[in-house]
Image (tube, rainbow, N blue to C red; front, top):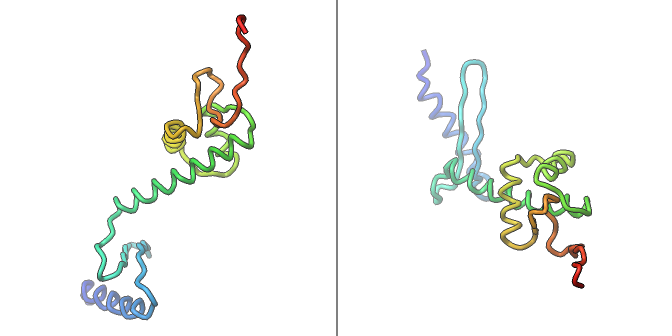
Length: 141
């Protein structure tokens, strides 16, 4: 009977020898399964701190929200008019953008706080701050 630990250790040594030929150490995680056995292989540079899933999730969410903000601005420009949050989510989905409603809501909050978008609570939705607002003339103008 084969000792599972020695099989894994030998495979790890072979993997490290193969990776040592690369110009710079990769940072990646690979999961795979075959039959009843699954494994997770995580690789990083020996001089670096071991990456954590939480750190990757944080980096991914920030990058995802940056992309979402750009996609929201693009959707509003394409529409040429104010859109509600639900309409923005629908437009992004139709455009093949994979942003969930929570990410869209957070990105809209970021864009509103930074002044890129305005949402004057007129139930017409979000619009670019640069758009000229059509005001109804006052009786006293």
